[in-house]
Each structure stands twice: as structure tokens, then as C-alpha cells.
Length: 112
Image 1: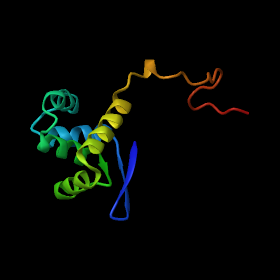
Image 2: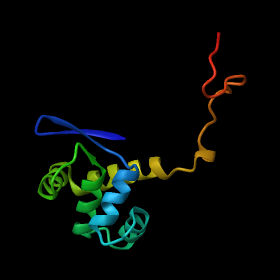
Image 3: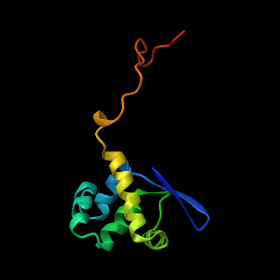
């Protein structure tokens, strides 16, 4: 997640199932992945950028507030922030560094 401040309030951008579903519903079925693929050829699609930003923003904001935030951040920074959180969410976990083994611990078991 990526954080920023706007008008004295803290916000974060991040994708999760709720954001994915909100975007898809707002854009007539277009998925977030399809949106990012389309942004490669039409990075100036203001409606798509606004909808992506709004879906990813927490706490929730109106379309007008999302547009004002994008204007305040600048389009390049807003796009970069969205790309970063999308990459983080969709990253293949097999590419991530492995956590240390917790051999011997099982879900629900108590360690003494």
C-alpha cells in the first residue's frame, strides 16, 4: 500500500478483492488487469485513471474527490503510485523472498 496526505487527511492506495470488484462494477466489467494493459497504449484515458484511483483509495472517496487528488498529486505521480500498488498486489508470491520456516508449528496448535 502507498500512503499520501490530501487536505490534512491520510489516505492509502491499495488493491484487494473489494477494490477489484468496485473497479470492475464501475467500468462495466473491465478488470483492473485489462485496465493497466489498456493504459500502456492510452495513458491519457482520464476516466480509466480516475476509476482506478477511486477503487484503490482508502478511505473511500467520491469521483470528484479522486479527481482532485489526482490533480494535486499530478498525473505522473498518481499513475506511478497505482502501478506500484498493482504490482505489489499481483506479484507472484513464488517470486517473493521466502519467509523463515516455522517447522513444527501447525495452524491452531499451541506452542509451549
